[in-house]
Length: 355
Image: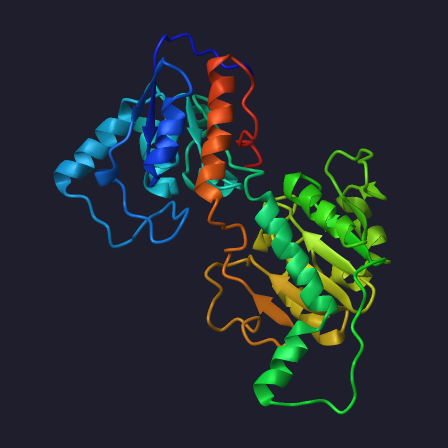
């Protein structure tokens, strides 16, 4: 669907914390743009790209009124209000001019679904994601997970903590020449594949629409996943959480892996049956799991994943980098130019499947 904006002027409200230099970059895109930006109404960042800002920040009643008044004047929002689904629901119902919201997350479908907005309301404006901005840090983290598994870093850390110098030296596994399966050959998956190939790995993977991809040995849909896993040395999941991917990695899929497979998840935690993963870790099908995402977040204190000797737990932070705000602003500026020119916005949230 093409953009149908016909107004001569466009108001953009900055709804989340953002450095002034990036705001100026947005302002400079076109003289028709008015950027609504009041930093005192936005919570301070605790670290680079802290889109939610300091949770202790509270607006006064007067500031709260100003914040929502500012957002309701805009046709375009940079970020979800208060960076949460409730803020999205409120602005969707209170702002009749709203045409487009750019989300900070690469996978904003979950937040859109959690807003509870009905399909009719969701058709009134577009939501784009920051997909692709996080591809490189996620791919680097996936490479870290593969290397950790192949080079036995968990065992080394345990020996170091116990001050143990083993009498027998255990050889590690070569990454070069090994086989990787990437589930989800989108931007994150392809960036993971690029780094893996640079390390000498042979890469296959899955894609919803099966097609040949340069540099990828074999492409299948999820129905063919078990066949790919039979010869894989490592598996990286980048798939989003949807009804079609929920618990894709179940007992049957883990049992299709050859013993000793390294498993990395930088997609969504709901794609993995965690009980089945624990069984695979304990029976040796999976030799090591590097997990940045979980079915329930924060990971519950009683989860056995916390203390499992073959698991690395990352608190859903592998996509973060000090360059994130700049990269998202650059993505938004590119999208904004497309929007103003009447083009098709990329990375739209699918409001049926919510990814």
